[in-house]
Amino acid sequence: MSRSADTRREGPGRTDALVVLSNVNKHFGELHVLQDIDLTIGRGEVVVVIGPSGGGKSTLCRAINRLETIDSGEIFIDGKALPAEGRELAALRADVGMVFQSFNLFAHKTVLQNITLGQLKVRKKDKRAAEERARSLLERVGVASQADKYPAQLSGGQQQRVAIARALAMDPKVMLFDEPTSALDPEMINEVLEVMQQLARDGMTMAVVTHEMGFARSAANRVVFMADGRIVEEATPAQFFGDPRSDRARDFLSKIL
Ligand code: ADP
Ligand code: MG
Image (cartoon, rainbow, N blue to C red):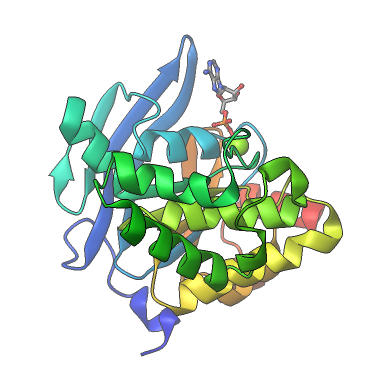
């Protein structure tokens, strides 16, 4: 089945829903940063979130991963809702892999240790199993030869691929990417996008905040356009880039394309 056919199954009632946000609201003081957000991501679906700076995209990602609280509404991951605390929260977080703009690797641990740590502490795996998994993930993202180096010895593109491997090591149900290539030198962007493309082809459920429109066109099942704390428009990439419905999206696209 083609990815675009997936988009017909929409709405919170869909049976393949993995991530569901229902009427989510969040304020920072006076600022209503998330306004009545309804969003469903189905299993294996790739949703690309785009929109102007300050629109709430990072806050949305952080809310899904419980790095931010919400004021009202509900967020479900694979049917499980907040509130969650302690071990339940840790387990929920482990189900949501997150990759940030700044790679956020542990500077004083080797690449291999970066990838085994969560497996040992959160997933309670034994050392040998964790290292085996780490090496196979490093292979998958193309940095196997860097296993014993420290993050600072790697290029930005390599560090970001390690960060992706680290997130994958937790066997997350969904991967969130918040502008994963924005901090990279131009020549390193494609090596990271290629890893993400492969992940998408392998069926990973993904939400990706990015300004890489080529990635959005080729990898997304659905584009979500977010501005001023609202989801203004949701469409297939072909619809969105070919004929955006809202003036806000038209205006945004005219500035970046
Ligand atoms: P985006 O990722 O789309 O650029 P953000 O989610 O980072 O948008 O930010 C949305 C708005 O919320 C911005 O106006 C930003 O300044 C504000 N904001 C983000 N985080 C905080 C915070 N911790 N405290 C106060 N305001 C914040
Ligand atoms: Mg952001």
